[in-house]
Image: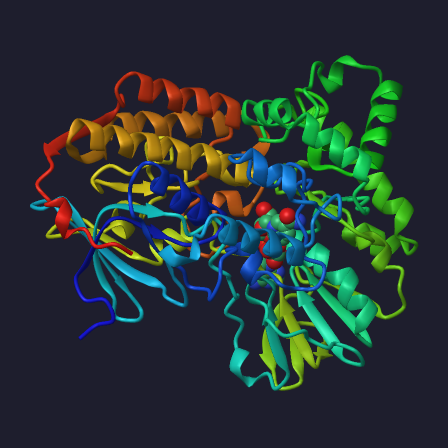
Length: 548
Ligand code: NAP
């Protein structure tokens, strides 16, 4: 007998990170009794797994937090401008306690398959622990950056030292003192972990494939007066964030083009923005993400900063990004990143000119050298946006598999549903703003839209909703057109799937901004869920639904 053989629930949520947690709360509010499966043994999602030294958010704490409950946002005190992983995890735990979420979650349980039956309009969901659960609605809340990616270097198993991935870090603290440590990758995670490891390790070797643009975070302890001010103005600030492009009230509302101001004025603005320590840098001017020449003014400014900070000109040159416009890969925020390369115990290996050939017992062999290492940290990122979705075998009984449908790239309507897979909602799915925004703001918008939609279905007695393929085609075309009009297509980024060999090159998130997207989704709902087919009358006896 399976753990919960043939349990039937009204709604099943996959994941108990920030998306899944809010989905539980919101679905309860509309009278449902959701059940969630979570692979970790507690809540927090990305903040549960990413425990590497230096992990912290690059959105300010006052904004990277839930807005749905005023008491919650008033009572929680953030200790730093940019919260550390540990603090965000404490916050997630507090939210779980405060709203009694854990009673709806089965931890240490990974969903492996989900099959929709067109005859009953029910999903059958299976887990790696043998659970088989039927659900009317499935809400995929497994996160956009939750499937860590380890490049498959030859000889990986022969390395005798310790291996780590930033996205799946041990729970106990790891002592690197006295060790020779290698870090592969210089994205947001690498840029955060490298300065920490350089301080602890005897020697640190950084294996860099693509230099990235990074700005100093100027993180600091929270100013109580500023926090109190923020809390007094939360209502307006949150509303502004909701209708902003990036889901962040504190980002500048660009009024002018970079190319319309004098070089001196621009330089002064960049200098001031550099010292503000925020990814809002890239939103200073309207044309920065659409016009190459405009972008180049900002990129050149940051390149000069790198040359100023890094003392060895050859090292500075290798750290200077030249192959993509600034902001087309995720702009990083750091603490002492470039300065770390002034330390005598840090070596930088450019793996484009000196590629990694194999892992060997003693360390890493590149074409030109053997790097002897006691530990290797993979900061090599994720199979982003679609990875966690496709890790589950979603299919329709006797019909298509989602992996087949998305073989040439994800296809969704509004990033919320994918045609042919009824009653499956995606939170921050491909085709939605998700990773291009403050993701908590994006999550709240999605969960609220989904809850309103399910509420509407319940009230009208409809038991099946699915995206119309024609509307999906139009949405996919619209996202592609928007991306094509921007510089984002000029980078080999994970937004494009470029970091995963063989993954289709499709710009996955919606780049039109959260505010615009929110209005579009609201309009669709207002028009009676335009572009969705609503069908079937409820047949399931509510008494069959088990309390969880
Ligand atoms: P990432 O941005 O994908 O960076 C992965 C790094 O590993 C890149 O430098 C990549 O080089 C390198 N790499 C991958 N495969 C490699 C290989 N075979 N050989 C050598 N190098 C290889 O991943 P991430 O740093 O984990 O960040 C992912 C996203 O998570 C971020 O963009 C951000 O959205 C989020 N994040 C946010 C924070 C924060 O809030 N502060 C912190 C961490 C992560 P290429 O560039 O050449 O592919």
